[in-house]
Image (cartoon, rainbow, N blue to C red; front, top):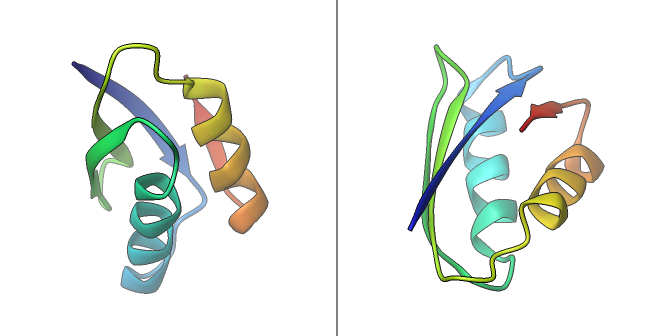
Amino acid sequence: MKTTLTVKGMHCPSCKMLIEDVCSEVAGVQSCTLEMKSGKLVIEHEAGFDVKKVKREIEKAGDYTVIV
């Protein structure tokens, strides 16, 4: 399954790497790819994936806003 979110507040490639790392550590996430220019985060995941947990973890990692 795939879910697409929008992440705002990124300003450099390090932000992109941090968000992808944080996202990939959430249970049920198989892979994630973040397009820095558009802010689109595509998450491939298992059924029962908790999108609210990904949002919470990314927003805890820095000054980012995740739009579900």
